[in-house]
Every structure is written in structure tokens, then in C-alpha cells.
Length: 369
Image 1: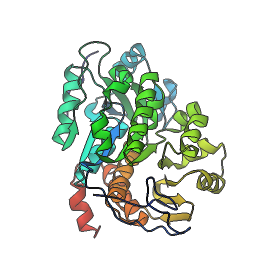
Image 2: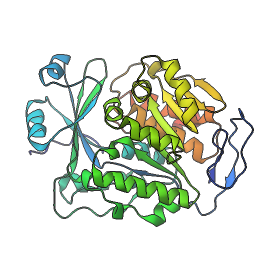
Image 3: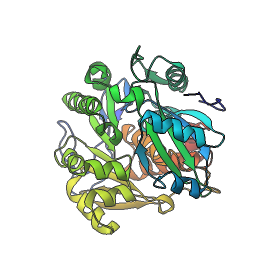
């Protein structure tokens, strides 16, 4: 495939809700404070595990989506011939290192967090670009590049005039992330291990997911999961709910569409009530309505930050998770963590691409966070 022209870029554990993962006693029901617990061995605030992807982004009209059988606002997995066909018909594109969890981890680093990432790319031009970009963002990345096999994964993103993004992902090398790629020392040394739901599609990556979660819990750490996409939830609904109910996942991130898909209801309140019964801690984003933080103590709404103009919603959920995770790792209240997430999401939707263009640490300071 012809490579597009590159136009741009590239502490402490809190209590969560009523119970804490580890040996600490529970807070009284309804107490949503974040209490600081010393974890001197935590080398990283958060480690992310996900697909190492390079985004290829172009603007498109809705007719283009309809003509190519794409579901607006969703993500579909594609094979290499389909990737060729979409790229050949896309308009002028820019190339930016991406991947859902990778975007989150870059966002966390922009807040000043100590961050690491695990993901599989090939030793090709795009793979080397991905590795360079994530390290340049201040993220520790030591997963060896694959010497053979499929090319580095890429996501063809079409942005319509309303700023909505529609994604077509060729996983390539990313689907070959294996359990042995998960560094036990890095997981044990990370306050939070963050996993993307997209990992549940490739079989090897699913096993890497399970290994990482087990290692994190063995070290007394937290495990967070993003549901990633409503169509991803459609594919793996029962298994995702089992991960939450069974305690594999301590912190769940979802948007409103993903939550409704998870509980197969069109009513948000019904879905949120069901989530409260199953999740230890969850955050559900609702676009311009902000988000709600859900735990056994209740459902707490937090407002969104105002945005002058929505340019591209790619990465909004990823960057929200970045802010919330940083707040969680630094023992902030759930409300403050959600405000950090909202701030990061507001920054990223104001420009093209899924990674911050401004220091989020400086932006947070400007807003008194």
C-alpha cells in the first residue's frame, strides 16, 4: 500500500467507590472520597495495553460513508484488500500515530503522569514512526517490533462536516500482540493497567489482556477497561459484563451508546442503574452533557468543558480516559478526575487528530486543576 504523505505529528492509589482492590478496608457506602494509599513501588501511574495503530485521517461527506457501507460514528475491522480500496478513494489525508489505548497513554503523559504502553507494530516505516512518536511523547515503550508478518496496523478515519469520525481498522501486526509481550515487571510496577476493548477481537490479544489483568491484581494494582465502541460491545457483550461482574475490571469507561449496547436498552437511566449494580467504579461520557461517575454510592453527573467548535471527535473518549486515570492515580476525587477528563476531551476535539496539541498539564493548571 502506498504510504500517505505525513503532514503532522506525530503515587498513590485511591479508594474506588465502596471497596478497594487490595487489603485496605472499605469506605462506608456512598462515600466517594479518594484516599491516598502509599505505593512506593509504583514506577508508572498507568500502563496502557492496546493496538499499535497509525491513523490515516481525511474529511468526507456522508454520501461517501453510505456508498462504502460504513456506519457513521462506528468502527469496523477490515482486511488488507478493503484497506487498499478505502485508501484509494479517500481524499487528501494526514497520518498521525494513534490507537485507542495509545492515545490515552500519550494524554496521560501530557498531564505529567509516568506512563508506559504495550502494543505490537512491525519493523516497517509506519511501525518505526509509531514507536518514535509514542516515545517522543514521554511514554515508555519497549515492545519489540515484529521482524515479519503483517504490516503495522492502520485506521482509516473519515471525518464528516459535523466532526463525527468513522473508523475502518486494519489491525495488521497489532492482532499478533501475545501474552509474552506483556512485561510482568512493568504491569506490577504500574498503579493502573488500562486495557482497550478492541483487544477482545484478536485471540492472542485477548490472552494478553487476561495475563495483564491477572498480573496487575496479583500486585495489588487496579485494572481499567474502555469498552471502545458500541459495535465492539455488540460482539462481546456477555464477556465484557463477565469481566466487570467477576472483578477482572475495577474501573470501566464507556460512552452512552456503548452503555446502552451493554445492557441492550435505549433508556440511559435504565442502563446506568444496571451498571451501578455490577461495576465497582464506572464513568460514562455523554458528549456535550458531560459524564456520570457511577459506583455503589450513586450516580454523580459532571459537566463538560465548553468547546467553541467541534473539529474532529476522534480520540475524545481516549483523552477523557487519560484525564480520569491521572486523577485516579493521583488520588483526586472522582469529580476532579472527571473534570480532568472533560478538559482533555475538549482540547482534542478542537483540532484534527486524536492526540493533544497542547500541554494538558499546563491546561489543567490554567483551570485550577
